[in-house]
Image 1 (tube, one colour):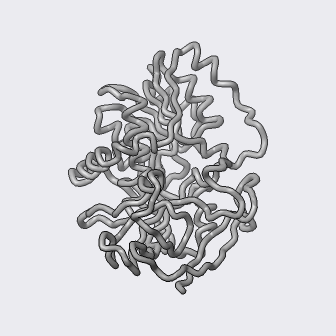
Image 2: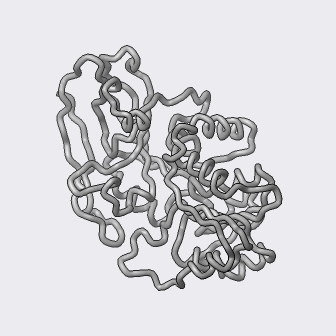
Length: 334
């Protein structure tokens, strides 16, 4: 028997997550059968979507959802020898038993070998070259359809997704406005080449947008939602395009929002607004990863990781993410 640890959702989230929502359990993994492998977590991802109240994300009593990079430590599979690195949505588990040959079609798209990244850390398969990077690449390029000269607004600009969106917009010849929540974050976003960067905690959103985009905004990539978006909508150009990626400002809300209803602005400005889940472009991920890797190699695309240690610290690290403790991608080193 091989022992493993897993984090269970003990109680439903209500407002901000707290320690009592999480429970650490041990389990025994059975002896390997032919074709099976055991994978030990090396890096684990914590992401804002894990807080959402959706049955397909988390349910009480189940292992908390999430992706990890893991190393094969025992193997009875010729295709996955010991030492091989894989990435998979096995959740918050320290060790996982997998039969790669018996995966369903859905499981198959969530389990693959980590590609050769050269001198780059394999943790990037969870960040700029993984789901967050693909979220930025497809969510921005496919939905906003940016053109050279467009003015692009990105909130959550110091996060894993927002920082990539802004840089892709610059590669495409756009003027980019970013908002982040601390001086350190704003300084880093400026270093990425954003044209205007504002601290939303210290500077008025309306005044800042009038200053940076007096003629209005063509493309808005929204990671925040809530009051920020209600204000941003008032600065959109006619026929502007909005990609709704997330709403981290309201994930912990316990009361209905008090912000104005945005739909009359959407109507009067004839805006194109579309929400998305990045897995709709799953079959095109190799295309996106190849382009992002090329931009990294060319020095056009930079990234940053906030790496925290310890599988036993997963809940604490996740809760700190929701309070903005990360710059770039938050990664847990098991």
